[in-house]
Image (cartoon, rainbow, N blue to C red; front, top):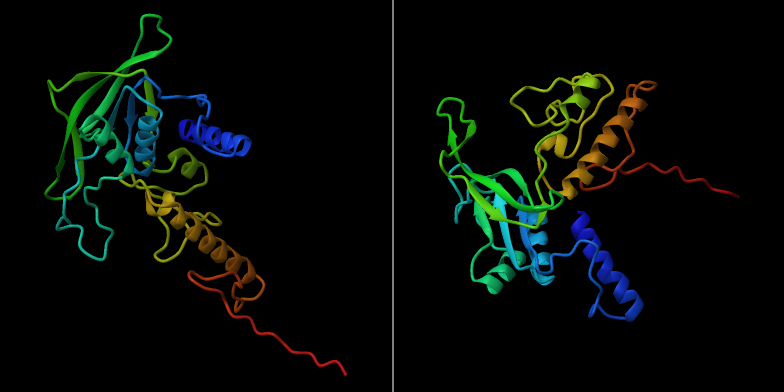
Length: 260
C-alpha cells in the first residue's frame, strides 16, 4: 500500500497543481527502470503490476503461492458460489502487451531475499516451486516444496501484495476466544457475530475469511446491531435494536401529536 498510495497521491497532487495527470514527478517509491517482483495476487497484486508497468519497470514478475485456477468452474465450486476461475485483469493485460507474456507464476514460494554487493538493497529473490495435495479423508489441502526446483530471480524492487491469512491468534487468546488449530477464522454462533467469549464479537475477514471490504462493512454493521440489541435487552428482554438490518432499515413507530 505504500507503493500504490504514494503513486496515486503524486498523480492527484500534480493534477491539483497543474490541472492534469501528465508530467507528474516520480513518486517516492518508483518502479521506473527496475526489475520488479510482486509477491501475492488478487486485486492488490494486479494494481501493483499495472502501476509498475505504467511507471516504466524493466521487468515485472508476479509470484502466487496457490495453483493456477481452472478456466471453468471446478466441481467443488458450483453456482451460485463466486466462480474461482482464471482471470486476466488490466494489470496482466498491460504486462502482456509490454513483454508478450503473463507475468504470473503460480505455485511459487519466496524463500529468501538476496542483497546487493553493498548489503543494503535487495538484488534478487530465491524461490522454490510448491505443489498442493488434498487428503482424501479430511479433504484438507497440504503444501510441500518440490525438491530441486529452486530458482533465483533478479529483483531490485519487491512489492508485497499478500492477502489475509487469518486473525492474530494471540489477540484471540488474550480475549479468551478459542480458535481451532486448523481454522483461520474466529468461530461465532451460526448466523450471529458473538463468539464463545462473553462480550466479544467478530466480523469481517476474521470471521468469514479473506473477502471484500464491502463484506467487512456489512458485517461490522450487523455486529454493531447485535451488540446494541444485547445491551438493550439487559434492561428490557423484549427490546430490539433500531439499527439497520442487512439490506434495509428497521421501521419505527411514530406517535403523532396534535397541537391545538
